[in-house]
Amino acid sequence: MDWAAFYITFHDPLWIILLTTALFFPVRKLIWVLYVRKKQKTQQSISEEEKSSLKKRATFTTVLLCVVFSYIYVKQVFN
Image (cartoon, rainbow, N blue to C red; front, side, top):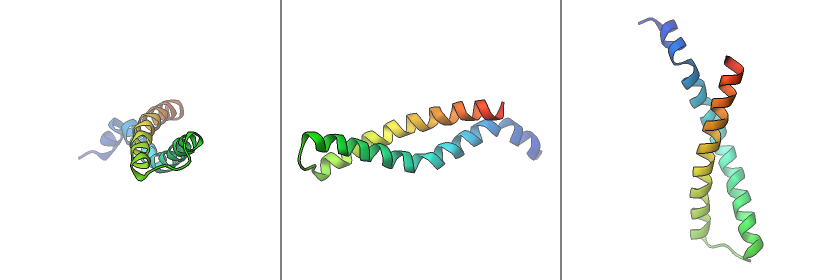
């Protein structure tokens, strides 16, 4: 198997996946904290159910944001 051809073929998707993975956890935590703080402005206390639903929402937003950012970054830097 020719590793150079394999690397050239999958160069951009590989870096997009690596960058998305590296950004996912800190960005999800940041977005989740922002969601919780926004919710706390309107309510005094937040239940665990609300926190878990906000975490799911933050996860969805983070996936979209990280994939788009990683794609744009890799296209700008490597091309």
